[in-house]
Length: 172
Length: 124
Image (cartoon, rainbow over the protein chains, first blue to last red):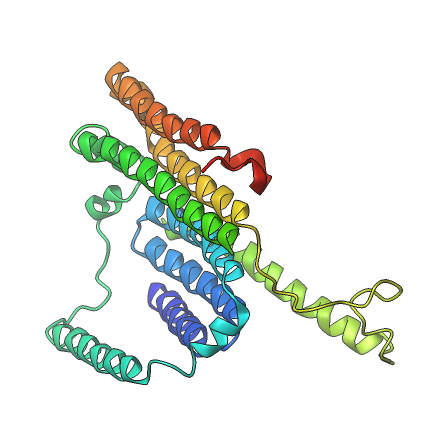
């Protein structure tokens, strides 16, 4: 049963990722990215990583996508259409890198015999909210506090970027 | 384990099927006789001018950024809230330090006038 759910989710994830890349309308691409992230959350759930699954929907499909859409709105429409004509060399390099990464994935998958192993109770206990909380506030307390500094730096950075833009429009 | 999420799956399927059924029903049952006036975005209103996707004010982006930061703060509060009673007072202080650090970031944006919502008030 798990295998069938996995196949459905995996196909959905790959299809939405492809649709995201191929789509010419950037807003549609962003919405396909939401679908991609939701199917990834389903795959996390299959791996018994419940906390990660909920965070995937809450943060990525929610907050990060809001930011993506706002950045798209901030772009000029003409500039965005030009993106499809330029950078042919970059496209080719990206294609080569993609082939390399795919090749590496298949190479490392060749040795795996048990693709979807049974998840033991011990493995299932790692992904719960309780387990994450236990580890986060004891062993990884310092990285947790550093996250606050990182987030504050992100806010200040966003402010600096906006400030730069506003000053330039004032000059014009 | 996975059976616990069966209701969510049912909910998702019902939502998708209901959306498709309603769209098809209205397409089949409703008369569709379009003309230029009917297809206007505002049937009896102003004619639309320019692109629908105009450039937005940067203030929206800054508010979105602020939203992400506090969204992530909540993400960290969930596991803490679940395990708070067992982890003790030390983690309470740790969480307070975390929240105060993010609050300093909010104070900074407030002082800069980002959330004043008028670009002219932006004291950059």
